[in-house]
Image (cartoon, rainbow, N blue to C red; front, side, top):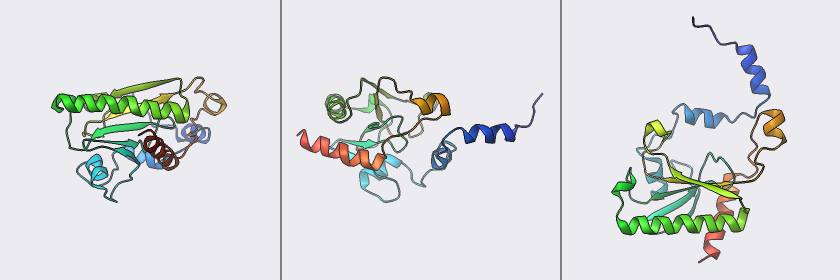
Length: 175
């Protein structure tokens, strides 16, 4: 038997959590009206938020607009493709080199204790953008703070725009 949601309890839960309304819209499918968000970033269009930190002839590294942690990077090919099998061996080699460089920059700027690195391939994996991309998520010891435990909310301690500038400088100084 299906029952109606208890909106009173939902509002009480909301009062205990930080609410980021634009992320909810994104999760429900409200996105820029473009064929590919990453292709728009590559082209430098103002139709999407651009948080680029580093670019080569074949790849671009950007901050994630909705980061899991400060410094959450997305690395993707400049040319649109949807699966790693579409990459040439030389692309795979450069991609791996850039992953390592990104982790080196994040190590020097944020001192994470580890990383989650990987693809979400296909809709069943949670992928929301078809353009091939790799997430590089810095992880920290004791990521759960008092707000996570008591308030049931995750606090983002750094604005992605500030992260972009900081990490872009890190890439530029590591050349």
